[in-house]
Amino acid sequence: MFGLGAPEILLIALVVLLLFGGKKIPELMKGLGKGVKSFKDGMKEIEKDESTTHPSEEEK
Image 1 (tube, helix red, strand yellow):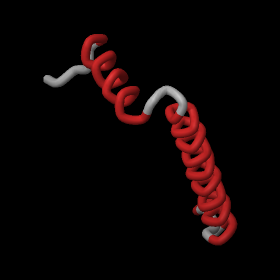
Image 2: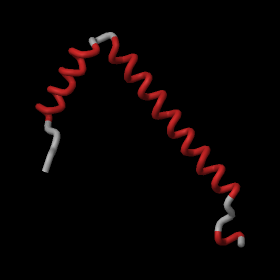
Image 3: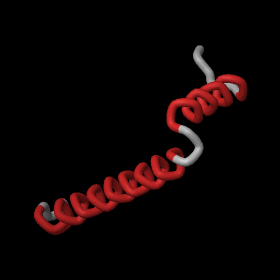
């Protein structure tokens, strides 16, 4: 249906480079990485809280 090939990815990368400039992209990626890490940590914490507050079927 709709696939991204090498030319499309290259074009997207070029547009991002033009919009943000070469110096700004590493800062954006660093912020994105921190956001993803924070999200994963939050999900682990939620799963931990759920496992301690809701006993499984085996414990009943």
